[in-house]
Image (cartoon, rainbow, N blue to C red; front, side):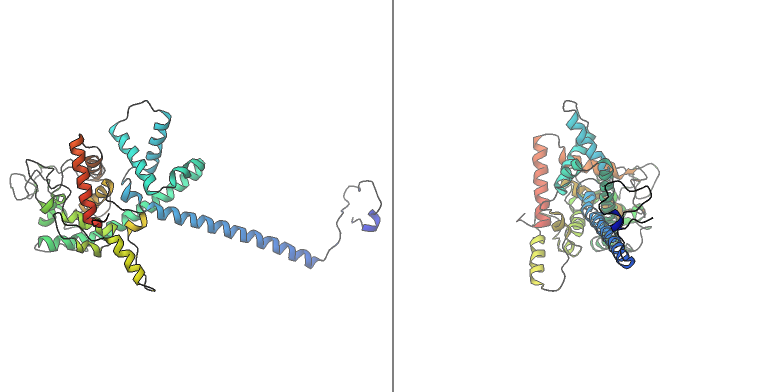
Length: 366
């Protein structure tokens, strides 16, 4: 039953149950208003979806720096948990692993300056979702770099070592210790590849190549001093070329002037000039510029060393362990070599080595 305006005018009592107080309107007008409301709801959903997509894209993009600059294997959650632990328990001692994680958290906040405050404002589910997207970007970048170096490292080995037959750029099955050139570069520094007594070249079952030996590809001129294994370590041309291929550009890797103390070109400034010169042509921004890298860091060197070692090996998919060689411990060893030296003299040498790296990669102006 519908109560008209005339029937209800002047009445002071409540309408009987079941009586509507509606004022009759046009069905067409009501339909238009309903459509308008639905359109607003659809638009709101579109905006929410667009915002969510932008956040996802942003987090994935930002995450691409994590494997390269912060941690190669440890979960991001472990870094956050270690920082939380230290905030809650300031008096307890820390292990070497915990110290490495905490230094990793500090590097994380340098690479992603917004993340510390962001973690404080998000609830648990939002935080987990953000970290998942960051990990997605981190793993994607690592995969891209692995693919890039697969071809490039083979080409560099062919040019520098002139093996017969040449190392195939499109196949990894014939690399590793079954390949004379790759095997020599993978050989531990304290052994000689050509020495039959070592048994590596002949692939006897008595030798073990583990992460606790520095491979010869990490040494200047690919030669090590058995009496001083630190001499020339981390100064190889292959390492520098791999670093530049990842962080500046694959083409810039060809500009490396070899081992020694010569400075590299100012890649970042060259990229800026190229972008200024090109009014319409697109100039790809190098990774170092995108992530704000101005100096070479220990964790970036460790990342490149793992990538180079993997490229020289004959394993075809990324993994943590290759027979007796553990990549995670290898990465840890390189990071600790730089970040946790045994005393002031060693720390001074590490600082000088990092300065040398920065000059080789970015030029003297950095």
